[in-house]
Image (cartoon, rainbow, N blue to C red; front, top):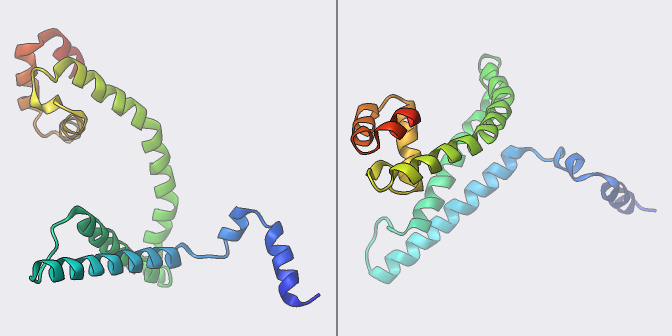
Length: 168
């Protein structure tokens, strides 16, 4: 047997999780950033050619591709912090903290969504703060941070006094 067939034999026996360990996620992050930035650039060129004007394309796809690509490129700076002792605590904290925060967010998301649906059901006809799912989530986020508490509370107390007291 040659070396390549031995490699493919061993590689085929590895689980997907063992195979992933051979690749650093920074490489994937860079690859996605390059692809999204390239696609956004091509879309901008097509847009400027079709409209005989230079400048930013105003379509949502181009803006999403640009924002994702640029964000991923800036996140790449963290890769270089791994190799400096002074900054490694930031990386270690993120490696430990992000999975815990994500687990918490996944666990609390159904409760938040349910709370939003209750607000929409009771208050949508009385307040634009709960007119749809997105408005309700924004309102709950703002109230959680202490913004617009009085506005939303006052608006709902006059329309639905008992339920607004229970809800808030």
